[in-house]
Image: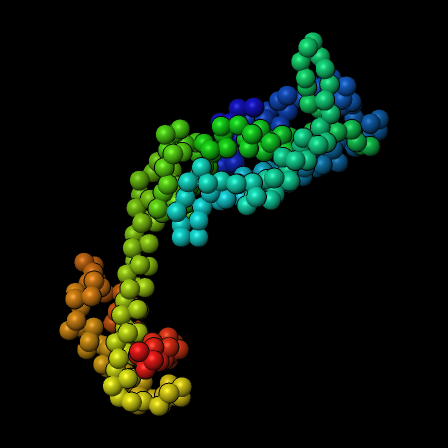
Length: 283
């Protein structure tokens, strides 16, 4: 098996001829009857062939993506060393099925694995070949080298890592060699972190303001005048205190900064504000 061909298939970058050769390669199995039954319609055979390969390609992509994703944590950090079949049930099932159902024969002192016998002729056996690909990948060094670019718009996301990169943990995930893909993801994370910090600070200011106003608990959020007062206070507070709490940006303000610090922002976050305000009361 050529792992570079597998990568091309995953990326959908094979020509029709290359893909046909990929599925047919290694098909000279002995003791496997590839003869088409007499009177079998050639058009039906062609449709069957195309459908079987399309399903096999989809299964391969889903199982490989699942295996690669098993090395990623909820916080976005990723390392191929963290991959685990327990978090990749489809890949695990396919690999297990390959080893359990393949037939073993001895020939010239060597062992060969053949597809399981079936009632119908196995003219292509794409399903079994996908099982074989998965089984070989998860049982070899390729289990660490096969990767997928985390930039969602990457046109050819599957690629092979350099061996030295398998020792690293990537904060934003693993990306292909196109530099802009990593930069876009990093910028998105920085913006997300910034907005989270802004929201936390605004929530604290709002809770402090409420505590000073002695606003009634629980139902203050139904009073528009209180919410308008809070929103105006937060807008002024943000302008005057910006930079003192680590929330200054070098770029232009985001929507969270200026447009959303109004009544609707208070309405959306009143529960967090009340929870924060009550923590002051208990202290």
